[in-house]
Image 1 (spheres, rainbow, N blue to C red):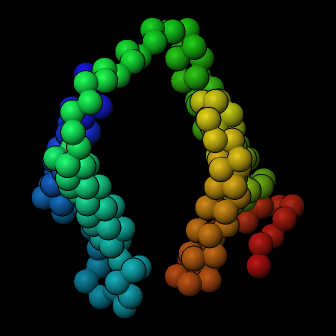
Image 2: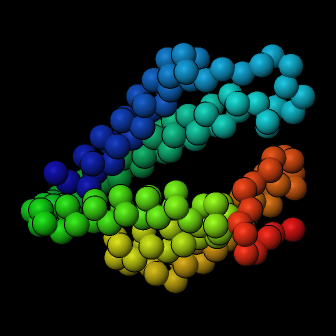
Length: 163
């Protein structure tokens, strides 16, 4: 499979998935009251936002496929290192169990930071500095938004309390 054909397949798949979310999954499985004061606090807002962004990314992939010249480079086949894949899967299960255990003790923000770093180490990311920066900034930014803008209580830990 070439890079160009992979780009087209991913774009079409993303658009079809977004259509499935908008037409079936969100209306069927997400319920929302009609009297929500702020649209951003509606339970329907974020699922539709994710579906829209997924469709946009799919369309951009298709546009990129259309504008790209075929280079003839064949992508590498995935390695068949089954024991390593099973070990990573087991490692992710351990990280998830540790998150459930640490959540009441450390709170959601600190637990998510540790889980992000542990996941990045487990998959051996090629960008460890960026992963570490994101591990700190993403949970903090989400905390600031939900706790201070949206007014939603975020579980705090026993040791460190965020303002």
